[in-house]
Length: 408
Ligand SMILES: Cc1cc2nc3c(=O)[nH]c(=O)nc-3n(C[C@H](O)[C@H](O)[C@H](O)COP(=O)(O)O)c2cc1C
Image (cartoon, rainbow, N blue to C red; front, side):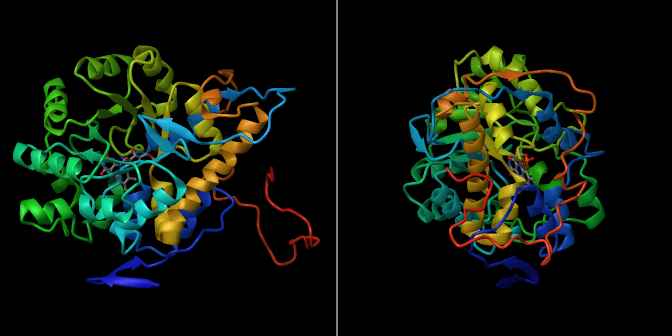
């Protein structure tokens, strides 16, 4: 079940993951992954204030349940930029999936396709854009671009993505340099598996490089003209990833952006940035339905997806949880993570009378202040309080009983 790439252990699993919630995956991954790799994924920057608040800030908003809605069988199917998706959950770009699984992004793409989710693969993927596309030719996918100082490199990346049938580009603008990630410094983290674009173009292998070195290869100076140029070269829709204010959303649209990704990079860049859900209303007002909005950072629950959609997002991205799913279950593990979020989302949809994702976008959300609403949930990995499961406390179901939170 474990493959070793030059001594680095990579999972070879392909199995569904039995889980109660996404938070518990982090704990389980810690047991199977080298510590440096686990810290690289799990950590945030500096004091991890932003990382911590990304999830708990969802508590600032409340969902009003609806009565007498005369509705059943809700569906998470949705359409996004002409793509038919089975879920509003997007697989956000993460570098080097080989850290979690031997088949890296090929496995992730298969899992995303199984779940009918949009997959945005990273510039710093281990596998080539062609290999990823071939893993599920019909599946919808975006490519994330870390703009390079070298436009020949940018042109090559955009050209290959277009030829391989990618449907859009996410231009990441919030990571001009790496955030100050202390965990990486403590473990001397370097990428353990070669990264395709580095092997292909830059001569080096991309393996054995530190995160700071990787960022040094990319452009620190990105402006509105770059958005225009990327659009022209690729002919693809360009989303600006890392927008955290209404003004920047407007600037992006003026520069020609076809969409906005509200993201603080999962709390890995500026520590002290607000949680994405807290700036979403401002961004949504500024965007005013001119272009679609994707939100990520801290999403761990179906109710988080629900709130983000109801507050202005069209899709909701997840990062770390699917990488944990990849390590714990390969392609099927990635699908399990999305299915878990869908399962929770469907419960919320039934309880609010939302039959479709479009209905969720019009759901009633309030912003009532509660003292201590920033306290983490009891499933938060920092609290690590899970209801203990022992042999003794198992309830023996009768033959025809259904278990689980909801059986529609
Ligand atoms: C290990 C790791 C690597 C990442 N690599 C990239 C990347 O290559 N490009 C990018 O735009 N964002 C990258 N991100 C940010 C994610 O796209 C996403 O914004 C973030 O993970 C969402 O937060 P979450 O992990 O709390 O769900 C990375 C995040 C993690 C955790």
